[in-house]
Image (cartoon, rainbow, N blue to C red; front, side, top):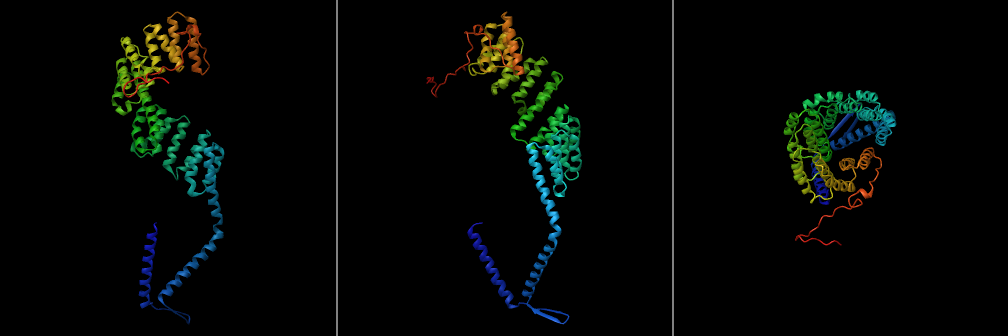
Length: 419
């Protein structure tokens, strides 16, 4: 509060005190107390002040008398709070056994019973003792039923029982009364149980709850949509699902990639290519470019020329080079596919590029080099080291690992000179 406000308050208090004093001075009142021959006479103001003093003295004496009897309960509360703090720290540090012990001791205090039992259940679950966790949750449900229900679903899911977790949360989800954390658990349980429809239905209330950051929610949403697409059984179901998804959910590269691959597996090459090309026109995506290179079809030559047009804007993209190499190899244009794949491997080695290069060498009749490429592909999949190709077999004698430079121009369109 500013200084002038304090001054104004003091002036108001002084004025009230002055007027009050004059008002009482005109008629201070009269109080007469007579008890067993003893008579006391005083003014009303003095009697009120005396009563207040007597009340204060009685309060102090009462607290003094109660203090020894409350020492034990105060010590109990202090120790319980300390055990709760120690248990939570142990839980975060991964000392789950110590955490469970301290938290169960802290739960003996009624005010801490709910949070202490919930944290103890979490500690037991992280140790893998799901039975003990459920026992703690049975007790916690008496004081914190909603939180205990959500945590029980998480424990069941960790224990490999997502269907039970989903059944536990379904009544509240159907009525729309799930807590924010409950919606997230519901999505995860539905995914684990293979019920992608329920998982998708829970995305909207989960987003509205605001329990997750934008990045975390987008990641979970992508996971749900990809799982839903992969669970479709035929092209008609896939197209129905895709048409029902909002436009915002059909723009994530991973979701488009899942749809394109699934549609291609059902023989729907044209819709798959349309979605990938439309997405690449909106925003460049190495993941979608690599998928684009896996498609077959009768118009492969035209798609190869289209993809080669992208090379001018993305000369250093290994995924695009891999896609060009794959499409050239599918057209049996081995001399064109080989430098594309070697360039892709120079920029970012991958098992897919080694496998495609093996196909190229196989098409060229060099079985030994093809086998070496296949071995390298398997080694990369396992995380082992790869065996380089002989320099004499590479285009130009050795593999150029320098990125292709893009010509830089100023605002007037004049090329910049290299320093």
